[in-house]
Image (cartoon, rainbow, N blue to C red; front, top):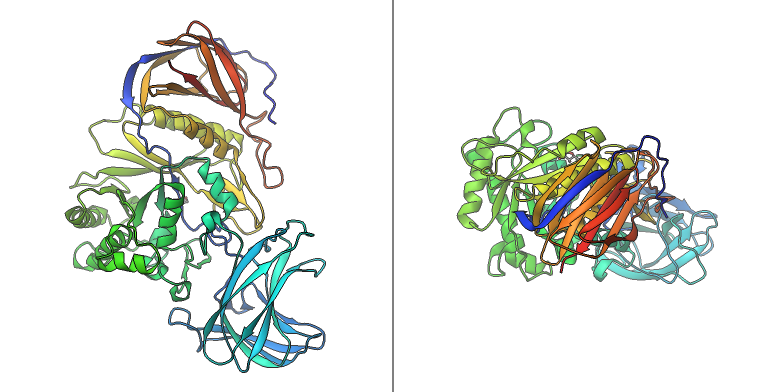
Length: 618
Ligand code: AHR
């Protein structure tokens, strides 16, 4: 539990915060808090997407098949290669070829998969597996989860492969009670006789959130639930753009059975399985009751090339319209019918579409034309959709503009005032990516202070800032898992944890009014930040003391009398303090109560602290 005491070296003068709950100022957007996501830092593969088998489609480089190893136990003799001419589908037209010259029950041969930095195995758990295979003769394939150090078999089964012709085989593995949860395990597939075995799409899933097949990790989904997100912006970020045209997020290659998904290179230097495809993103929204913010490819790729507006761009505009139809169309539409074929007849509601990502980087300055072309086509078919621009555009006034902020703590303190004077007549704002970038792999407490200060500014200005999302959301903290530092939620194969910034956001989202109220502060330190929002029954105060000394504070509440206020405090003794995968709960919110007497709260904010004070209004 976090300690609340800190040395009072240079006492801060007592500040006063006056809040008039009877004087509403401006509306607060119900969609202010949401999530942004893309495949970065092993966010899906090796992260949220619960697949345990790494490189399930057998990609290879000069060193051989990545993440897979040949097994020759005892006197067995075998060879492992890639068969580039034989696979179960057009999308996966290659396979792993295991040629076993010598093997028997005591000396089996096969392949080993290392997982995503190990394979998490828990006691009394059912694992759902499958693979595509064909073989030179009928052969039982033994599938087993094995402890790395002891070689102990944690779960195993035998899958009879019936010879020539590609077929999908399904199996279950069940672990017993006498084991400890651990990720120091691997998967083995072996045979006990001479034969040739071809394999593709080897998959193994633990139990998933809401029991979805090919679904999401439960621990990570539960962390997201606590953030109460109202929307999900997907699939990026740079990931929607791709390094080149052929590695953009081509959504049509991410739907349907897994065997029909070719996989693609993500801009973050690893291959995406596309197991997290368009429908899986939408189902993720459904599971957490978030609205989708559909980011569509807009003709600009990270190599700096832009498709010229006009006829050349039309194919991508049509792709976007098809994408909206896949998500939101009835089953009587072409793409809505495909969604039904894929298992989801009910349409999703799409209110926001974002055209591209960070198009201010387009040096050819084609975004005005590209945005206009998408805007007109989307509005013509879907006048109800708000079309988000990724930067300022000339010609058309966008419905919403996506602003991004990545700064150090001091920079975010300054940005907390950014929207205080923004022209209310302009487009609404979506802060689609923001983070205080201090701390690695996940932000430290200094970053949480910058984040919380910044959020007070968004809450104060939520009449114009209608949505916001931190980025990046996830990082696999195993060696080599991170491409971008300061990520909200960290995990390895077995466990996950929230950074101090994560807890600050959980706290902020836990109490949010539907309007701001008139308020003023006097005599506070420069590093004191706050917001005051209210709805009929409650007042929510967000208080941030980013200074290294206590902040005495008298809160006067006009329009309310006596009672108790609930307080949640996040505090650390240093800005460098943080949570880690080994010590995930060093900095967590601590709940307490504050007395309200005659409309006053006499309060002392600890040094380096973030507080949410919730007052019942009668
Ligand atoms: O969040 C990481 C990256 O930062 C995003 O992919 C990109 O949009 C931004 O530049």
